Length: 74
Image (cartoon, rainbow, N blue to C red):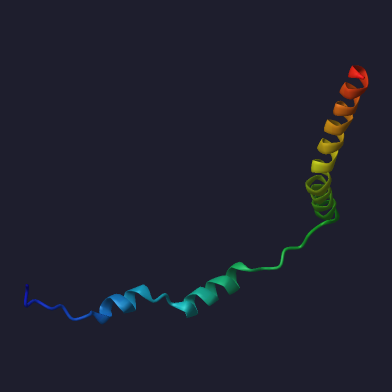
């Protein structure tokens, strides 16, 4: 057994602690209001529709194809 005992260092604790004041200043600087034109709103609206309705459209196409296949077989 060793008699060597290293006391905890407070230097590591200071290095691990982030400077929150600087972080808040960075967030405040990077968050700016962006002016959107009408075409930007239209693009966002179209993108939202594609995101919402694309799975439903694909599902309808698959169901329609299955229906045709079942109609031909029966």
